Length: 123
Image (cartoon, rainbow, N blue to C red):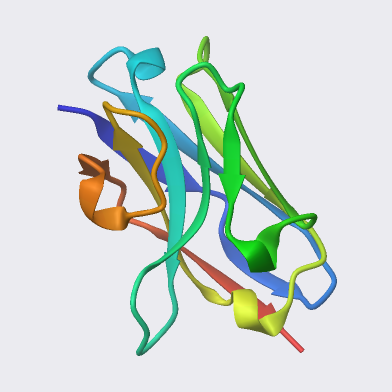
């Protein structure tokens, strides 16, 4: 089992920044690719970003490219999502997820999930 806990959500004005953290425990963190997903009210969960086990490969949803940065610290068992130039449409609950295989944009293939953290961007 892998336990994931997200931190860092909150309320921010449009154009502002937030940094989300996801702390992992239970298994060897570096054995898992990590992803960030989000779910806005009334909408399906959608892919945001993913990072490979080593951190060398990253993938982003088109609307977040250039604004969001995913990174990981395997020594600290933590994955991060730096979010800049936030827009009201970024408002959602953000989830981190772990996958034993490689990175994927498909939420259905991730093995473990955190409880989520709310991000609200006001206009």
